Amino acid sequence: MAEETRLYKAGRVLYLIGQFPAINHSYLLAEVRHLRNLGFDVPVVSISPPDRPLEKLSPAEREEAARTYCVKAVPAAQVAILNFGEFLRHPLRYLRGLVFAIRLAGGSPRQMAYHLAYFAEAILVGRRMRECNVSHVHASFSATVALLVARAFPVTMSFAVYGYGELHDPVGTHLAERIEGALFVRSINRHGRGQLMLDCPRRDWPKLIYVPLGIDANEFTVGPSRIVSSPPCLLCVGRLAPEKGQALLLEAVAALCAEGHPVRLRLVGDGPDRAWLENRAAELGIASNVEFAGWVDQDALMRLYSEADLFVLPSLAEGIPMVLMEAMAMQIPCVAPHITGIPELIEHGVDGMLFAVADVEDLTQQIRTLLESPEKSAQIGKQARARVVRDYDMARNTERFAAGLVEFLGGTGR
Image (cartoon, rainbow, N blue to C red):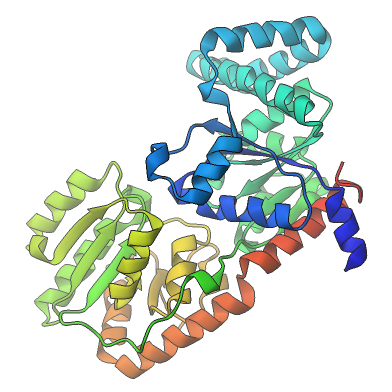
């Protein structure tokens, strides 16, 4: 352990994140802090500013926001000046990165505009790395910018893949080019690693690593034994968008109500589908059974967890959702689709219930089973927490990732 600590204290890696802090990505804040606790120097660059005003951030988020360099906070005129300065300093490297960005655009005028913007952002990130004396960048939701940084500066890059967003369009997101240019690629579930293998040559497979995320289960305290409310409350947390499948959950709720199982559904989150889902609930005759709570902060979400009898995730595409881990840690019986990495987290009938994706009848049946079997439901909730504590502890899994960083960075952390 002493040797590992010595190596970690030598570790230095810049985290490049699409938006930080962000309520959807609280696990990134936790991971950065755990890495620092292990001895790593981890400066953070965020492409976009925080997703909420500073006064609505938690104390930890405000602290991180204050020390985070935000690319889009730099005025356009200064971006141009900094890019020109970098061209004068290293013209060949600058042009090499610019040509690569143009090649990635593929001749599309719209993509050209995007990729020229990505390149301009990459120059700011590379300059920041030089200021921080960091030679490796690890990207989350910003891998294209990191790839361009590695083309225009003498640095290495890696990135993390979390699920649907990175994998659903491998051609459009230049996934193969990203993998080829990366020192390593982290998948948070085994299914995702398998998908990455399909999108790159076999020679790149050794750089694809599986390291799960996690939560601090101690932050999700379990209250007294649950007494199912009347009517039972179903909780669903996530962006209101087609891939999240809330439309299917509305149909399941309507079916349960029609057969004499009145339930309340609380939808937490917002997004482009909200108006459509509100109209759909009215069409199904369940508008009075459905509450659209919008986005809430973590404290409010904790209260909603404590009021929930079941947690239901109807998604059509996922990685391994953090909200599912959180609900399981709260001993809330969960119903989720049998897709991607979710079966790695939930064993059907043991620590949760799985249903065939997009199958409203099966979704309804799994909810019904838990509603009609309070003892089974309580047992599943207890085993769900045990599963999260055993396999998805943030501190332990961050230590695994730290060990991988040291290995890939040559044992010195660069």
